[in-house]
Image 1 (cartoon, rainbow, N blue to C red):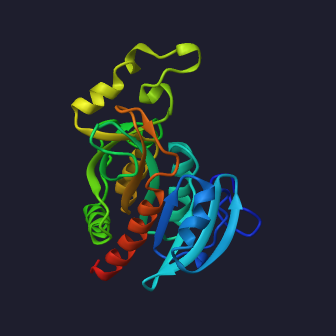
Image 2 (cartoon, one colour):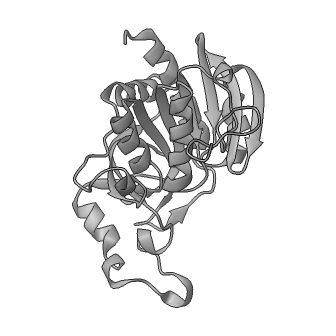
Length: 256
């Protein structure tokens, strides 16, 4: 059926997972290589399969069944994962990602919990008009912040800006120094509006989550700082993973 593509086993065309593989919680990194690293924090981790950018493992934490699925880079591939996971009954989705901080005092390796996102992506606008908010679920934001505090990890809470371009969309000069006029001052504009960082997926996750009635959140490791021009490839990623896994336990302990 072209309207709802599935493989020969009846699984969603892209993520290739079955309802029996999943519980109600998904952890969503972008990088397929990060999936087994996250799965190591879970009890009884096992690979479920890999198709395109969608690498998946299953496990448990605190008695909660969890699936870890990579989404690739950007809103379009993230939206496919969100759609297909929601169709299989997943209700809570937490993104574990990286970002570039745009505040001088957010050091590389620090964590940022996004409670909302500026919709500078194109994918969310395919679902709803521009004025619709990209907002995380308060209970997920609170669980992530409490988890960070409990692990003694500093976590900034605030707004991220989600773009569809890593280079010009985030104010970087492109090949041969090209940058569109409307992107030359985008870093300064976002800083003036108290945005904390740039990344590429949370606006899609938060918007679709609100439309679909999901609980969503995101925690990022600041691997770079655009103001100080510092960059550390893996800074803070282990901390972000630990915080997300601890947050799942906190969410399970709370009444729905």
